[in-house]
Length: 183
Ligand code: ATP
Ligand code: MG
Image 1: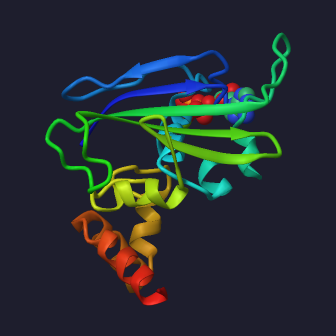
Image 2 (image 1 turned 135 degrees about the vertical axis):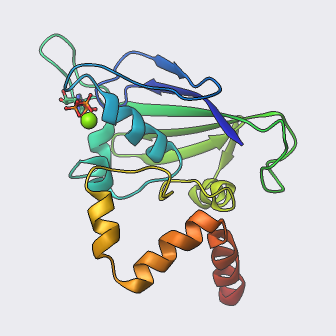
Image 3 (image 1 turned 180 degrees about the horizontal axis):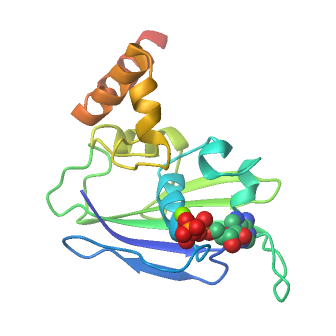
């Protein structure tokens, strides 16, 4: 699965609908301090299910909603859509019927988050399962935050093993075993 487009609407500083087309090869994002480069990476993490406000540099999950500026009132919702190229049909069963997958996460003030995959309502855990076998997802080691390298160096062995397992693409198996044991 390949990321092909990220669309933001009301997410952090991206108050107006904004598309980031992710072409083949390397994509670089350049701009002055505070223009929203890190917000783009946070949007990517958020749409894949990130639920820790600290990972989003906020105090609460609703802090991802555009908070208003001198000339613009605050928004009531934030929405991020992620388009995946699934032409190689690598998505897990249940999601594998089409060449393109669109994952949408929307948060509304006082109403929490809702997810959709190709216009169908899904649960947060369905989205996390969708990414669990793909070595990606909100906690993917492929998304490197500032300070994360030193965290990895200082991590306890167990935490470091989790990171290696995620990179090896086997964390989905643990999630399924855990759910099977609960049944
Ligand atoms: P740097 O080059 O310094 O790393 P950057 O391009 O990564 O900068 P970001 O950190 O992505 O910039 O963007 C920060 C901007 O986003 C700040 O101007 C901040 O006010 C704005 N911002 C963050 N959250 C919100 C929000 N909820 N509503 C409106 N603006 C927000
Ligand atoms: Mg930044």
